[in-house]
Length: 52
Image (tube, rainbow, N blue to C red; front, side, top):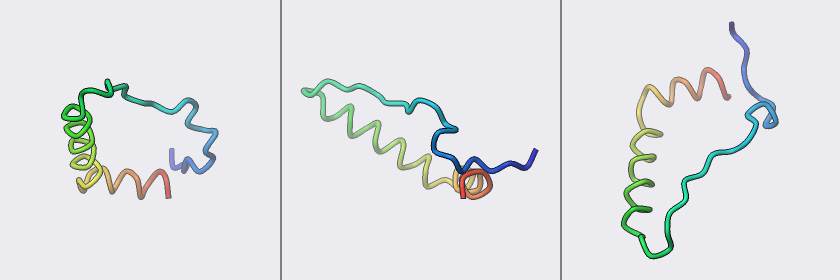
């Protein structure tokens, strides 16, 4: 299977993480963890292969 997912409608619903307004530390930790994942070579390779 070598199909690229280029149609935004293909992904269906978007995901979100709810964080209480009075918990900025949790929000910062979640954002930092997502930044680490997005910076990883594995994620970048998957993104390049399937989404670009």
